[in-house]
Image 1 (cartoon, rainbow, N blue to C red):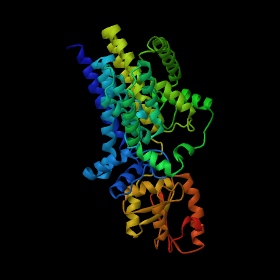
Image 2: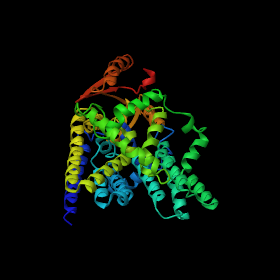
Image 3: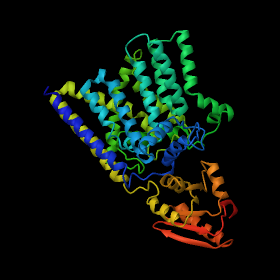
Image 4: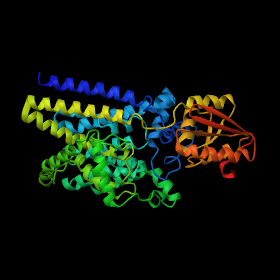
Length: 487
């Protein structure tokens, strides 16, 4: 019993740190919601009004399954509360799945420690899992559940589990092609175990997959399979993508670099990263060849990610590191394996080293948040802007994408039309049909600063313009509604 006490204390410490960190990232300055994030809340409220879409507004990818759950929670506790409650619930589910997947190999104590650590480390995971990103956390949940089914020691897999697996793959595919990070390891494991379904079971898998991914197929049949034929332009070569992973991506996953800024937290950490890479290769590569007939599906996510992310058009993009959250559970398993080795081999000294490493992980998250504190996450004080617009009885707004959808999330009575990246053309049509419409500019955003002068001059050539300054915002109120394309 005494041997469990240090681990329990450590789990309690990590849990408390996770609560504190989550409180920090959902409050200013971190808790500012940008337009990309606001879309999930806007879509959820629109679902309750009967507006259904297969993908994120204005895109041919990014399934909306999660938005339906947010819509349900929003009906019970309010949209703005659901916006932050839903990610917490998802994070808890991910932790439970991680515990289930690692308990047998690592033991209950280390598995529980790793599961709780997922709430607070690394910073990129904490940040991205603190707000609903529609398909990111749900894809992880679907993927981990699939791996849990595949990894069960009972053979053969039951018919009901095959059907469930097909549905998990289908929902994952609807959500994002990034579900392949988990689907491919599951398929490889099935072949390695020679645990194939019967023809009847395989047919049921296909049917359940097609039903679960039905919205994806329906939309793509009507758009010439735009999800496959259209996409962002490549941001570099495969070599560039691999170098980005090596220099920035993986160090960020290990908490050695913070999200957004991408700077090393300490000058010595590149050497630490090199030691971790070499040590992992020495420990795992021999086991990969030895256990190739009984692979760990969760660990197979790592090489799958490396390959697919290198092949992806946007493989060099880092930013908040959101693409890398898919591999965090697998990295935590690697860390858990190290913890189990230290505890089993060195007992008390090993536990001391584990405790020290966990504290270092928490310090890494704290330093990362401090480093990113002054990063501009999105427009602030939109409640003041909303109040000014209500005072002047204006509800139709033109403005930059990064401002107007956040503003619409702040005030549901506003109808917005972005000057770039239009997600809701029907909203833009309503704004153009209104008798009056305002232009809003955010002076902390360089693009808006440049556009303000141009728009102010163009409007003044056609009509009288009233100008209102609200903190770091400028609102232009032309006497008549002049759309941006007519300026």
